[in-house]
Amino acid sequence: MAARPSTAAPADAYSHRLRVRYAETDQMGRAHHGSYVLYLEDARTRMMAASGCSYAELERRGFGLVVREVSLRYRNAAFYDEELDVLTWVGALRGASVGIDYRVVRASDGLVVADGSTHLACVDLREDPPSVRPLPEDVVACFERAPGVGG
Image (cartoon, rainbow, N blue to C red; front, side, top):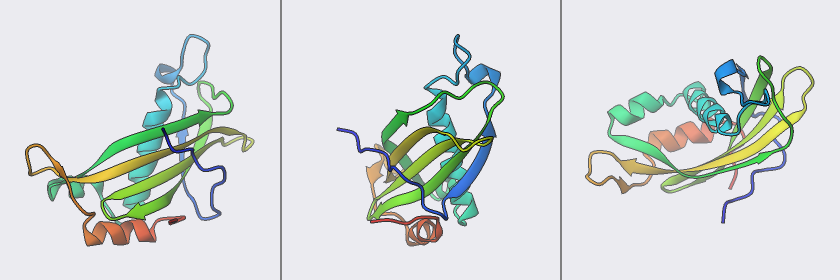
């Protein structure tokens, strides 16, 4: 069973602004539900970079963060060319995994569009098949510097 996304963003949540592109909309003119997973990924990797942790550098070192679970709750529609703010924060940090929570809001009026969460596991990409490994200490420190670190 999927974890429920958080219901409130902390005051210090990382904010990433994006614009809904035409290619991301469905026949009804709304942002397609599948586009939100990309929005979350973009916000997550930018939050990591802002906290001093480059995902590309992590992979060059032989580690990856694989998504084990995604949860989304759609609340209101977003439309082509609207600006959205993806609020992003660390919800949980444990050994080999990290949970990231999100709230997507329409920039023009703050209307909540969606809530989401992703749970990621650290794997050693140098092994075949990759195996779960504890998060490197510097990556843990990066996530501890990130907004909203929870239990």
